[in-house]
Amino acid sequence: KPFITNFNLYQFGDENSGCPAVEGCGRMIAGSFRVWESVTGGVPTTGWKVNSPDLTKGTLGDRSYINQLSYAFSTPDVAIAGTNDGNVWFGFGMGQDVTNSATWVNVTDGNSVLPNRFILDVVTDPLDPLVGYAVTGGFDQNTPATPGHVFQVRCTADCATFTWRNVSGDLPNIPVNSVMVNPNRPKQVFAGSDWGLYYTDDVDADPVVWQKHLGLPGVMIW
Image (tube, rainbow, N blue to C red):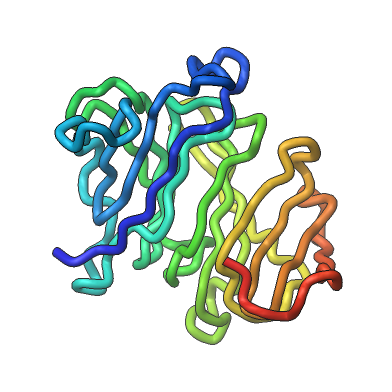
């Protein structure tokens, strides 16, 4: 089954993460239509283990694959993944070095809030691994009932329950390709779009107000 391989190496070394800031811990995940994990930095290649089921809907044929995945900032025991066919999942119990040892929870919720469009990037809140962000490609016209391009999900423990919120605010109706949260100011979120970089200083506001970063050219930001 064809796929695009995105990968993430846990590099934060936060207190109690189990990964010292200097030497790290070698935890690495890569995505196809499922998640692979190595706890030895990908070397040797035999150390890679499948650590998820198929996370896609399978509705796009060869284009149903994981677009982006990431460990949580504050712990490598949690991961988040987004697929090209509109799914977002949280993985718990990562890093055991055992095939399919993680527990994955599909938080897509039938795309009732999160649009059934390409999920181009996912990331967690720097302080709370149970808060995630997902950004989408396409346009509102592709999914009129679920407009927007930047979304926040808040989970209870192990994502037993979760709530999505459209935090697109006054962003223009253009594809958003990447998202990142300021680790020093978790309410400040950056969104890389087809027209350049946007940011909000308060993602919890209602409505969320976004500003375009005028110091960068108006080009695609990934």
